[in-house]
Length: 301
Image (cartoon, rainbow, N blue to C red; front, top):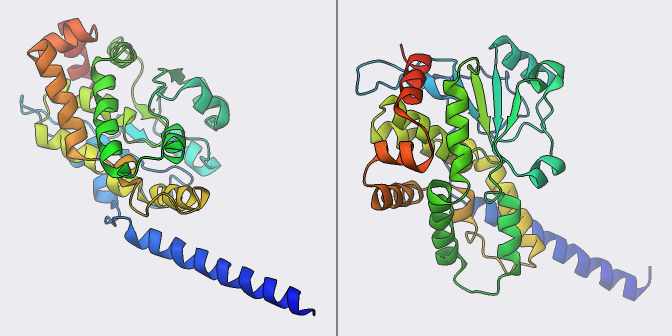
């Protein structure tokens, strides 16, 4: 072996070790949250292989202002279903799923179509909300030369949730709720790519209509910290390496997690423009009193 080859091999080995150490440090730097147990998720171990951030919303026995409780096994929320295993499909089929509401954009669906099989494919419906794709948001971070990326991403995420509530996409959330109220669409699965932002907003609207408390709505939303953390760490590592280490280890955390202030910002925007949730549902997204009453009959017991 020539001296040059030895030197090149040594340098490459040192670089590789450095990268591996940085990957380990990046994973360690990301916040760690406890795994969601079956008593909270309602999902038996091993039954949903290939499906991330999955849970049965009613498993937490959410009690509403009327004293009624949300049914179990009627509303599931997940991340994308593009890697769903055959056993997972059979498990969801056994739950008699009547609708799969996909909030991803056309581009997201083209890149990673849901693997639903012949039975569940007939239940799939598209509610296009195009501005919540985490991979596109990460690309924007990679292009950015701004130093304080964390503060910028926090502002961006609040604006994203404001757009869910008040932007043009709000009509698709209203259409989704009215579709359920029409009947024959439950039990259902709600998902986007990460299952935390668009899905989180959609589920929060259902829970609010049902009369769940602010804290129960928020706690369901915040469970995605645990449900998405495995994928979040992968995104953080890939982005840091792809940026040649320009992106800090924790820079993406505001984008890859969920925070109270994102949802609370959207709430303030709704009440600031419409004054009340009743008016928002009726005038903002076209969900009238009759549809809300139907939703209560479907989801509560």
